[in-house]
Length: 274
Image 1 (cartoon, rainbow, N blue to C red):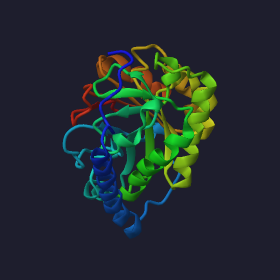
Image 2 (spheres, one colour; image 1 turned 90 degrees about the vertical axis):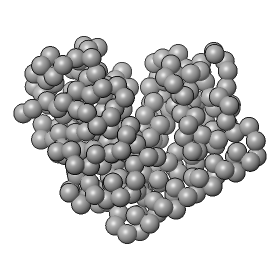
Image 3 (tube, helix red, strand yellow; image 1 turned 60 degrees about the horizontal axis):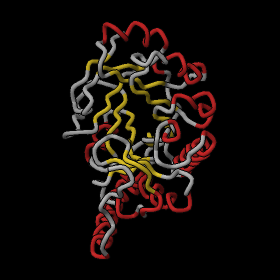
């Protein structure tokens, strides 16, 4: 319902439970951080890479691919360690400009930073102008990624200004927030990636090390990602409603690492072949 607020952080007991859960997650991740932190290194171009984006189900770490993008909350230290042992790059998917109320730290988001639902289940837009409120929450999320051993982070929901978030967000508001995310990631030794936000690619390419895009082929806008290609930075691209025979010739020619996935982003994938 428009204007409604998700039912979280309504009791002191619930808030305390959120803090305890997050503390346990961070404590477990810190062990990995102390044991063997990932070493930042330059990204190869996407033409030399294949990738997997899995956010649901048990991560399949045996997939034959170079880069894995996994959910920062549900991926285990063991799964990340197994991938790193195979010299795979591991990208942490976390929400930044949206809130999923099922996340264990959802109670840390006060009602005043929430806009309207995004249209996806359990998901609300966040007021990215309120950095003072969001920074400690997002810092802990990025620390969770870092502690689990991820090499990079791909903050999700970073183009709210282009939709109808129920908040008076501007182009410049989004630019400032996204650059802050990139700076925060780098301060923690994580390589930052820009997810979607295709209207701001030209402005933000210098701040990010790679791009993640959904459905640029169907939207007829893949050429707008070329600033990353021109800067020798990888573009990780996924299509849901087009077959590989349709989009692979185009996106491989552009230099993207492209794959066909179902929208639930489970294990199944059909990559573009070289």
